[in-house]
Length: 355
Image (cartoon, rainbow, N blue to C red):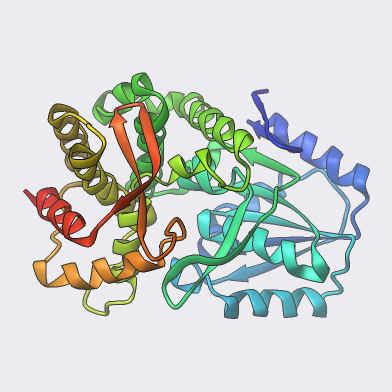
């Protein structure tokens, strides 16, 4: 069984991980298990998970609506109320079964319920396997502002089972793939070179690729668990990407972008900024742009939307002293953080993205 040792917990891969999870739950003698899932996973993932959970500890299933728009304090309040009504105490444990919304929100709920109870992540999407379930970031959105309420708290275990990926449509797979591309762009040029031609990827080997992405993220997180410095490089593409994601989420005439789709756009724009500020070569920028466009197509961002998107930049959590801070590339495989950028340059980047 593959295993990545993180800070005070393990990330386990494959079917054998369920036995270790069961052993852990039984050893800790939890009073009750709360399985937090969403409407999609309830149908497609929960029966499989329950069939592989070797424990006699009583459990309750809490189901919430699927989608980023439900990642709110209101949803959390409803979950907490349900846990109280079902007899949850400080010896209970939360198991999150879902994508990034569920792992972010479930970890946050566990961190505040009765001043903190344990939780385990069972990611069911590619994005949550390579990113959201690992590293201890939890949180919810407020009025469209991504993860502005949250906490750093580590799970007790993460179980990565690629069987869940069989339940996903291609769009969801590509959303998670954006985070894998990001790992290569900020940390491992050879990994990016391997990933960029998606047509040549053998998805029978997806567990190997997920493992490599998890190793990269875990290596960064262990050096900087609470994002005081180096961990910020994991936000490449996210300053602009989150602004686009939030803007689209709050506009009735816009389709909702998946997280990875917005981050893919953000990586192209921030790669362009890198050519202007940190010396990324135009050839490498074009390589990144061509890669993203070939996998995700080109989102039609109207010029009249620029002002709205740029306005969302002020909510980015990396900002300091009123200035917008960003992660940029010196070259593929090497990133710098805390770079100050201005809205005019971002607007030029948005124009360049669409060319």
